[in-house]
Amino acid sequence: MTKGTALTHGMIGGGSVSQRWGLATVALVAVMAMTSCSSSGEEEQTSSTVVATTTVTTGCADVVAATIDSSGDTYRVSATILSADTGWDKYADAWEVRSPEGAVLGTRILAHPHVDEQPFTRSLDGVDIPAGITEVEIAARDLVVGFCGETVTIVVPGR
Image (cartoon, rainbow, N blue to C red; front, side, top):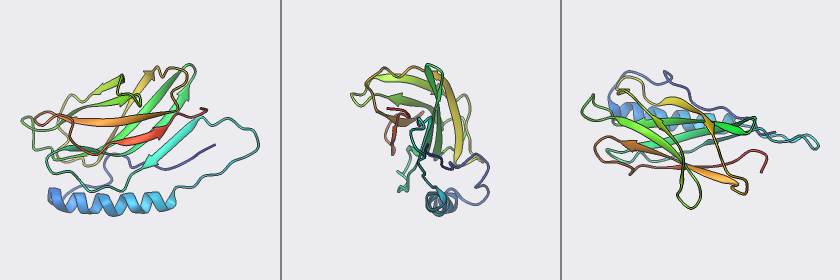
């Protein structure tokens, strides 16, 4: 079973956007160093975590970490987003779960800016991932510039 730690909202606050981005990169490296994997016999994997160390894409919404957990026949996907939110005029307004071929399997709408909450994590329940798909891509959208930031690819647990 793969276990890991993902950043949660509220960890990094205050300071300028560039200071928060720098702190986020340091935090991501620390989280990545703490993430551990273990296997035990024939136990089925029910969870996957990816923490990306990434350079923030100026003006875009970047996915910096993601988790996926099986929940019966569907999955719960969580994404940690780092974005240059300035208010209602510019913010990360959604993220998507995509197949390797680019088909959208689920969309999480973000209903408001997260100016003072960077990075932030939100989840999407009930994602139906067709049999045969072994990994998915998580991509975030900025209200103004669309999908232009860093993405994360994560293994579908049990596949």
